[in-house]
Image (cartoon, rainbow, N blue to C red; front, side, top):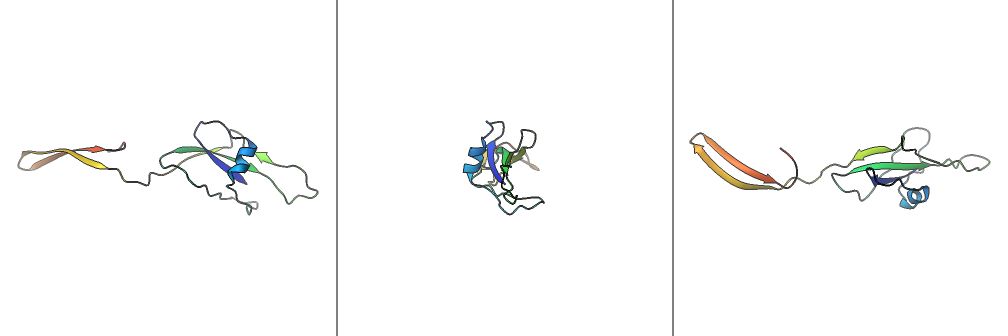
Length: 109
C-alpha cells in the first residue's frame, strides 16, 4: 500500500503522484496496515490518499486500486510546540488580587 498526505480539501493526487511519494508498506497482509509519513507540518489537517496492489496473484494481472473520495482518511497533526506567552500588563487593584494580561502567539485559553 502506498499513501500520500495532501492538505485537506486540496486536489486529489493521481496514482502516479501517490506512487512517486514513496511512502509505503509492502508487508501489510490481510489485516490493518501502517504507513509512516514524513515531513508533515504541525497543526495541519491532511487528506490521506492511498493506492493498493496485490503482487501475490498468479497469473499476474493488473489489480491496483486507488482509494475513492469516500475512502480517504482525514487526519490532523499535533501541535508539538508550546505557545509563546508575553506579559502585556500586570496590576494589583486590591491587596489580595493580582491581574496579569498575556498575549499568545496561537489561539488558546
